[in-house]
Length: 176
Length: 211
Image 1 (cartoon, one colour):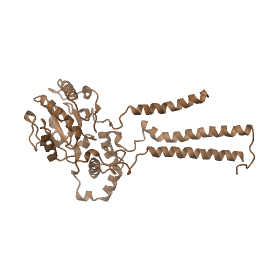
Image 2 (spheres, one colour):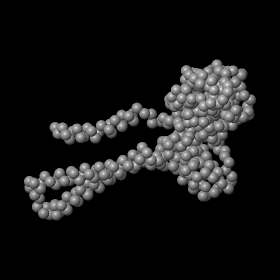
Image 3 (cartoon, each protein chain N blue to C red):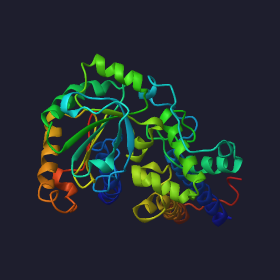
Image 4 (cartoon, rainbow over the protein chains, first blue to last red):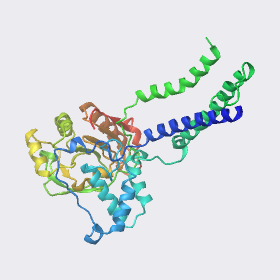
């Protein structure tokens, strides 16, 4: 019975650690639609000058639109805070979205379009860093924290439960 | 005091504190450009503001970057709605005038603006010595990884991006970069288009005050 209580305590503690760590990970994730919109320096130039090589058919192509949305939602708006070019109403974001659409319409793959923007702005332009090299830390750290927290919890639970066992043993079912 | 426990806590906290301290030394708005050292994105844009005197080009004339090979190019992105652009306008105009007749091309690129407003702004500022071109749809701006104005790119004689400056430039910076790029180009330009060292102008990225 005592062992059962210990296990329950340990599981409860682990759950708290997991929830806290998961919360922290979510807090680090980029805010999407709720973030402040628009580029302040764009306020004086509201006229959108979008020119491109898209035909009328391409402009209304739902498949192309969906592909554009997918790529654009992975690219960071340079004049906003943590918002993708898909979600930002700023003029530059709209122009970048048009550039994405044009490149997709020209036959480039989503990866090729992303590589184009990376070659211009660096990997900073990706809302989610690539899971490779040093970036792996971003993905591995939450898992390592959970693991570390779990190990720490096991040690603590063992310590907490060892002390009363040596002095005054609790009676069975005293906290049920 | 439990010294063992305290030292474990200190050892755990030290890397986190060090990370935060390092973070405080960095400007979160600064985005290092991957362009310096690489071939400059080419463009062909129409002149909307002609410039003055020897530096002038007719309105409507198409400026092709490829045709400027062999010259040091100072590419300044600006807009009439950009307050920081006012700070550097006179400086750029004056420095450009000083390089008239030398293998240096100053070029303004209008960013997210309309030429009429750009022309009116130039008149309000007392003129511009070098020509400015329009960039409809900000295609060239995106090609140069622009994220605000003013931003100035210094291209070497072999057509590579040597240096990028974010924010209003000063006369000293422009002269330093242009002179060093001209000096680096001199042995290479008369015969073969050997790759001039992009690092000749010093650090490749510099962030000024504006974005």
